[in-house]
Length: 199
Image (cartoon, rainbow, N blue to C red; front, side, top):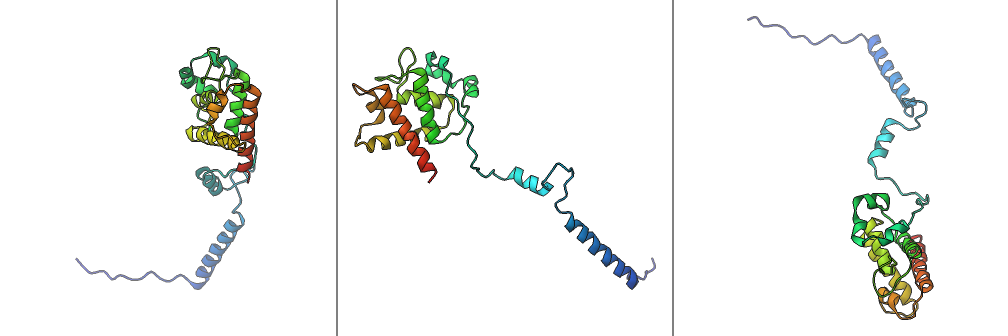
């Protein structure tokens, strides 16, 4: 085997090197000028921005949340355990996250729609006390347990401002209590929760 002499490639002529450098600069300038260009004229974001947006957690906006509808009145007659059926949950809350204020506002709407009750979570005709109305929302998937517990604390705080230390579910059941008083308490607690969330 004969040894071959390895030679370095010949250096490009100076005029070719200058042309290559000029071409690279022009390409870089062109690409820089077209950074905001997208594949379609109706698309206003670059591919990189769209990918980043898709992977990032969405930032909260000040847009109002969709209006929540309370559970259908017909559900008041069903046993409470039926409310956890996936189809019913899907038609209603289905695990949707709601604020404490929304939970309390919906609690008031359930009491208005189903009727108010004292002495037990529900009556045979489906009327609910405060705690019973909260249970309806929880079983149907409106919010989660921490939201319901925070709403309970908010109700307790509203009673404490009146100098009442009795638990709100016992306050609901007190002799002489009225539906109007119950709704006023729940809505006051909802207002305080909404105000606190905005401060």
